[in-house]
Image (cartoon, rainbow, N blue to C red; front, side, top):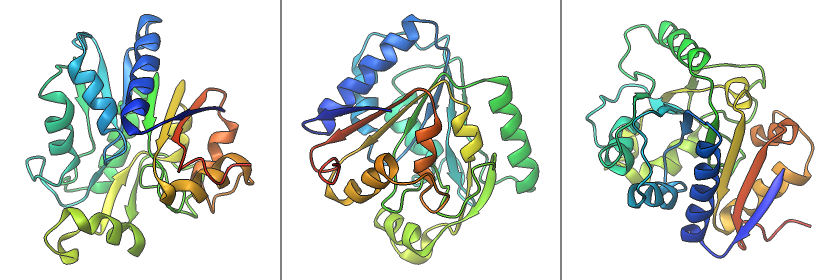
Length: 234
C-alpha cells in the first residue's frame, strides 16, 4: 500500500490524474468510478485535459435504488454532470436503480464486471470504513449486491436531499470481492473526519468490521490523503 500525502483535495486530484495517465499509457481500458465529493477534483482534472476517452469503458461502484437516471440525486446524473458531459467514453455502466428485479440486476452487473475487468478503480472511504456501499459487517466474498443503508449513511447523504425522508434506503453496490479484482486501486481521503478510518484501514487488523481494511491484501493500492486525513497515522 503506497501512501501519498498532499496539501489539499486539488493536489490530490492532480496526483490521481497523473496516475491514471500513466496507467492509460500502459494500456488501461476500463475505469472503476466513484461518486461523492471526494473524486470531484480528479474529475475536474480529467475534464480539463486533452486525454481521449473514446476507447475507454467506465464501470461505476453503485447507484441508489428507486431513483431514475435523470433524478438530480442519482449517481447516473452525478456522473453525467461531472464527467460524461465533457468526456465521451466508449461505454459507461452503472447499476439500474429502477430495475424491477433487483437480484437479477446484481447478476447482470456482475456479468458487466466480468466482461470488463477494471484496470483502475477510484475509491473514497466512509467515516466507518465503508467502500462503495459495503458497510461494516459486509462479507469480503460478496460481489454486486443490494444494500440496506445504515442510519449513519442515510444521515450523511441527507445533506443532498430536501428531507431525510427523501434519502433512498437501499442501493446496489459493487461488492468487496468485485473491487478487489481491480488491477489498481486509488483511494482518496480528505479531512479530519476520515483520519480514524484511514488509520484503521492502514494500521489496524484486516476485519469485516472495517471493510476498507481488506485493501491491505491487494497488491497495488495507492492511498492519497491530505494532512488532516493522515493525522492519526503512526
